Length: 488
Ligand SMILES: [Cu+2]
Figure 1 (cartoon, helix red, strand yellow):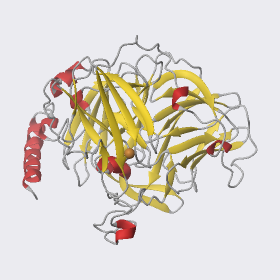
Figure 2 (tube, rainbow, N blue to C red):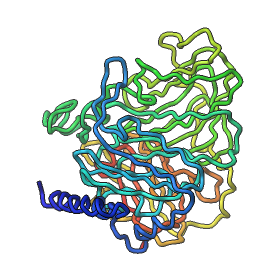
Figure 3 (tube, protein in one colour):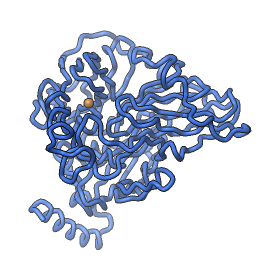
Figure 4 (cartoon, rainbow, N blue to C red):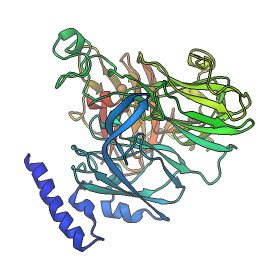
């Protein structure tokens, strides 16, 4: 046991005694410690600032066994005994108090993906908190706002690709579109065993002979995409698809979320078009398409008009990998057929109208035009002869922070010099695609296309602290594709 772990365990033993005689004692102080960040609210101030009726949730990170298909048991990690973790559903204006207990053999944290929480609640190890040690606890508390479809997941190493992911929904008071019912669709990739960093194609892995293809003990996984055994929709392989039942005439809202480790999905439903109503939780002017890309960390809400009785495939195909599409079944209650025709996939997976980023327009009017106070031109690269993935040639943690001042309008202009997709995610803020006055859309994760794809976003620096800005491909993040946005 190294010194740090010894100290954790000693502290925990003390904490248990303390808690035994004083049940109200804040155990977080003895477990995952908040890191004091100059200019940001303290942990206690952030906790006190969250007002509204409290919703207490207890989340236990632990080893789980889940059946992802007939005879296919995934021995992995999850929350509260399952995978995906329990959906947390809140009303706008409530206050969430989530006590996270770590029963894993490694330290962990939870990040509340997309929600602009105060800095001490953001769950980034080394930036906002010391990770929760094995046996430890940490309390996250924040106001449930704004409404939208979100995720929560571990932010330690590659734990995200190991099942420590779950949806979080904040329901709006007055939806801008009519619908009868909503369902959550969680898209994921399935990697049996412990994830390991990827080697570059030119080094180790397949070609160098240093590592081993697949899950070599102690070696790194070779290639650009982890050796996934399949794709999951709500925790199930296509061999055992979940059924989504609808009544004819119903308007079904699907909250499509991608917490996967390394998969961008193309999502479509057989026999139906999809009206996109929300992007990363933000209401958008409805736009009807045949298919949409949902990259890592992104969420899209779509409304489906149930006007074509039968049994249809709901499918999500990988854009960069080779696994067969994730699938579910859209089943009309009064339909004779209970499953789609064998092998049938939605036409939208290969053709039809695909949602484009510039289709998305926020319902809310954009801010009046002003020039950004600060612009960062950032190149995204990696994947050739190097195992590193970089922003402007720098691999985190050996990377300079992006320094901003409170109140500034900050522009991040990104160019992708690589052959892979990069869904870039900013913590603690929403940005607007394009410039703040262009009428683009408010998002927190944006897909930067491969091969010189360019995307610019702007945000207002209105949430002081130390924030992560990174690619949401867990393997790119692990290999350095991240920067800190630091208020100075
Ligand atoms: Cu990336």
